Image (cartoon, rainbow, N blue to C red; front, side, top):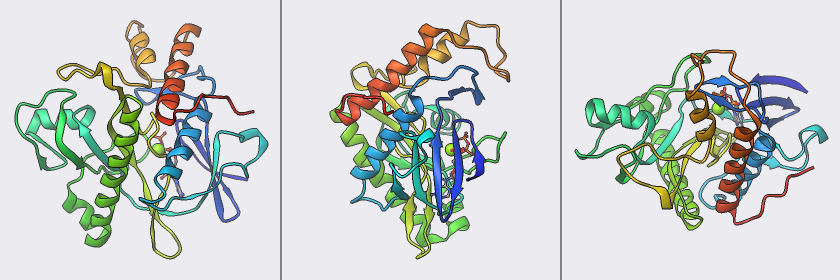
Length: 280
Ligand code: ATP
Ligand code: MG
């Protein structure tokens, strides 16, 4: 199989007409991949993504062909999918204020050109979820916000409307389902493509802790940084190091690895209601 692309965390192979999206146990913080893997992370995120694709099937068609018809060495952490023509927009929905959204709000009172009410703070719930697309920056550069009109200019009005509608629909379903497990979905990033018939199809991964901000609902408290379900322990631990956030990243001690793995397991279990059983 030909390796098409190797991201920080995932590898993408071409297999005939299909693609294999393989998630590794690599973890990155501040865009630097650390030398220490988090056991089961690739499988946890792959299984969570598959669980969501199934539960979103009435909202949007997806690229999944098979989760089992994959080479043994990738079992449990790979998805065989249809190759799409990816649309050049990162489709983000936000229900709460954090990250880049918070930065733009503080600077201008808007996110992606959408005006928000005054007085919001870090972690505030927005009056309604919003579509805040960004560019897909090439490796080494950072994504930037686009306005809805920028999306229209890039993909046309019909496709832009559809992307907004689908992104908000996926977010609404995701937020509702996750809330039942005590998790707030602060924001999430989706990638869509078109298939051979020109239909818009959901690709990539969906509603994982790499593509979303998941917060424990019982710990949510606007006005401070929230404790996300992903790299919190690694980031906090790294803050105490003499490291300038450029490669190479530091080795992660076993207790930080274990605590991080436990967070990923907890997010999977709370959302799916299933007990995590590592695949072979
Ligand atoms: P990063 O490490 O910042 O995430 P990246 O986004 O380039 O970098 P990955 O997310 O690992 O790395 O790469 C997955 C790539 O596969 C993305 O470019 C995504 O757009 C693409 N992709 C996902 N699903 C499909 C599909 N069905 N058809 C074609 N390309 C796809
Ligand atoms: Mg990516």
